Length: 101
Image (cartoon, rainbow, N blue to C red):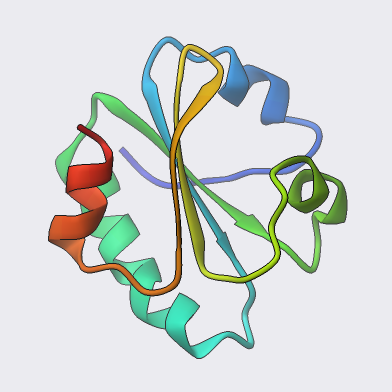
């Protein structure tokens, strides 16, 4: 499955998803974000049972505030509309997969 670009318009559908959701909060200018991004893409392609989305914090300040983003990259795992895991900073693919349970 491909990675969704998440914004205010489609976030409600993401929150209501029956799939486990992995969100990657990033910015184009962020070096560590650029290191995490291809890992998130790989996880999305290898795990069609997940809903994987990326949120550009510069373009989506409301969603960034909603999730309390103070540093990026920030990865969030949601199940049944609730946050079950949150990590800030670079994470390896194995660490990201471990967040997903």
